[in-house]
Amino acid sequence: MSSMDVSPAISGLRRRGWLTRIWKARPPLVIGVCLAWLTIVILAALFAEYLAPFGYAEQSLLKRLKPPSALGGPTENLFGTDDLGRDVFSRVLFAMRTSILIAVMATVIGATVGTIMGIVAAHCRGWVDDIIMMLVDFQASVPFLIVALAVLAFLGNNFLLLIALIGLFGWDGYARIARGLVLSTNGQGYAFAIRTLGVHPAKVYIRHVLPNMLGIIMVQITLNFPEIILLETSLSFLGLGVQPPGTSLGLMLGEGRNYLTTAWWMGIPAGTVIFLTTLAISLIGDWLRDMFDPNLGDNGE
Image 1: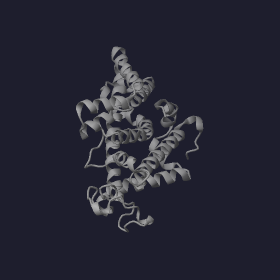
Image 2: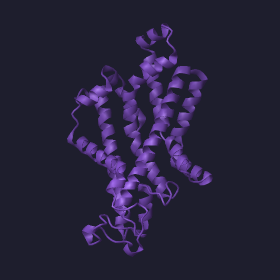
Image 3: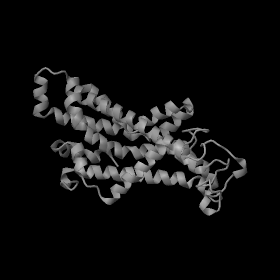
Image 4: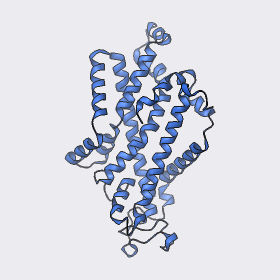
């Protein structure tokens, strides 16, 4: 979904604090299920050490490719074992932690860089605005996955490099939104009145502009977060993301692709978690966007 889809929500957020509106909203049953699933995923990732019956790298060659316990496999291996005898359930728990950690850190980087660039473009205008918007258009027109593959192939795999690279994905959407919001805010009377009092522009943006932007930025984060998870899993699936002995959902999916007909349980659990998590976040993002859209009325209450 495009970042421009959230632009109609600007006036809706100004009418009412976005936190107050979310608090008073009555989410539909589907959104409640999505929130419940995300809560389970987050808790499972945080407490993986206590929930996992085995270490994610613990091997037992005598238990290679055992099916899940429900299909006659060992009772202690809920989701079965992989080609090295590692417990699939334990690996899924730790893989969720890795994938979510990368996605969260990359989202923070992208949102921070994009928001700052958008504010700078709107504040400086002129050639600075032209250069930043040219970079935004360039980012939007280039297939980022190809760029990421090229960078990782030439510079080698590195966890911090992977996070920084994924963090640059989607910053253009935040920049467009921040620039539009700042330009709109600058045209309002209260912003002009504050500036005439001699308040430093940085303080104006931090204390008065940013609070009005947070709601829209949060909506954009929920729309961009699933794409970042899919980007990380794609890179790991192709062998350029998280490397063994580490684990991630994309890496597990890649390891299980050669065993889909003989040991489908190696990759299906990770793929299911990816699908349900990205779907849940996308549905929540759509709900938040619709709730803040003034054209849809106050149905979110």
